Image (cartoon, rainbow, N blue to C red; front, side):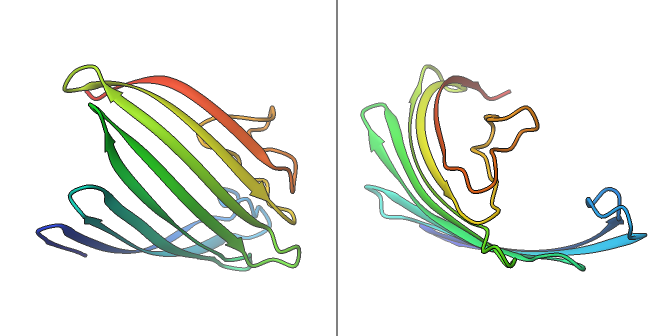
Amino acid sequence: MEYSNDRLYIGLVHDRLNSTGAAAGQPALASVGNQVTSVGASYDLRVAKLYGYLIQSDVDRSFGMRGGFVGVKVPAGRGEVNAVYQVRNVEDAANSDARLFAVQYMHPLSKRTSVYTSLGFQRNSGAAAFGLWPSRTEANGSPPAGADVRGFQVGLRHVF
């Protein structure tokens, strides 16, 4: 469901998925249900754009996750600067939470091609092992449980 009016946008999504236990990382179960509800919004202040979302995920016989982020996009010359703060709270005994702050500059080279650079820092606590997507920090794709993660990226983006 979506609502848009001039400078305001709000969207709401609710997904319900049933998959095999093996696909959900719980091979002892025949099937696992997962429900995800999220709401996002943005507001264009004309000099900056504010945006954010909230998400709640509940998996049968497993820990739920709550999270969200707030961000701002500000024009900077021909490009733009984006900054976000994200929170993830896993409802487990270890209090596996994560907090992320990231900033990015994107500079257009043409209508469909841009270069960018970004810097991020994420603090994992408890058994949290969230990485900075899309980068990998360990061979299995996740940092060690409770380890902080820092990342720096430089890249080229082309929209086909």
